[in-house]
Length: 484
Picture 1 (tube, rainbow, N blue to C red):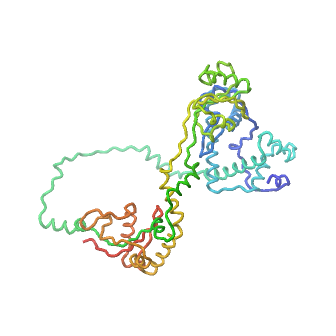
Picture 2 (cartoon, rainbow, N blue to C red; picture 1 turned 90 degrees about the vertical axis):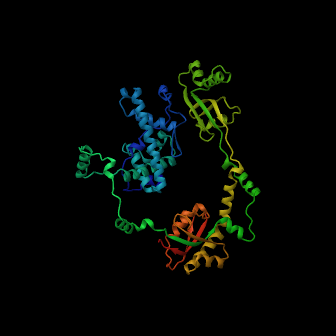
């Protein structure tokens, strides 16, 4: 795509500018000179987690520095102003990630031609000064410390976010009359009077025979018996289908355990460690602090740094991590390979500097036992092996129902067991007013709802219901006793 751009590809698509998301910044990591601010709680490892994606300190710090440069120097040195800028920077980065995820979820894809046009606009400040596009591109990549692929991906994301935002941010003006009505209602005040009526005001004369007869005629529905319906039903479950098939045995516990052991990683929770770390500019400073911790002369990194009088050390507050989440990745092996539950680790070098890590707590991971997942594994195995024969049975049933057969006729022809359910109300009560235990009980409401929605005179006498547990229930209406 970049090659096509260099060769002069033209496009008229998407001329908008992504000032808020791109920022037009110089690259490179600027190490902190605002130590006091970052010690108030902002993490150097990962500032936030948005929809499963971390905002790294490096990325946040770069944008924060650029945002500070956009305000007057006399204001940028004030702690309260810097705190507001940090908050706004973080909010903007979080919103950007949410929008990027939304564009991915919606399937929005930015094509090469559109992205190439945006890169040309991105290089325009340099090309307007006479630089070749290839030279301008190399300059931007060096300043931003990005590869060509990373720059393209970044601009694709920003273009997709812009398109998404254009659909979301639509100016809408409420009709003037609606605004006036709303304000009038909101500011309206009313005065009223009320009277209190005592119990004596509700006395009613004893009705005569004629009044009772009239009331009975008007309210006959109050003395009607409910409607009763009898029906036939059959239940097909994956396990039932497999049991009735010749040559297939339900998976044994030994086979399930073998599957469990092959996928033990899926049932293992990783170790977690609470760590405080400090980043130093030199290995000597890191060794000095590490020795004080390792020998027990100081208990905390902050105390060790203060005692060593190292002014440029960056201390990252205590955080809980797994081996996959700790930042930077260069310290993961040493921290999670440390045998004791607490203690000092280091010095370790990363692109950020020299690290000393103080492990203050360890939560050992947990492995879900085979007994806890055995039934779930069995259900998955049964669903996997029974799907084809189960759907074959369902197709045969539906074909017979389409031909006018009811549940009893289809079940007898296909040699499938079925139940004849006696007269019940829609609330699953029998003629004696007792609750009837319809089996399976968890599907009783769905079955009765279908039965009481069926018409005895319909050409299709039976229907198949698919349940959320993978089972199927076929029902047909047998008889109806109307309300009396």
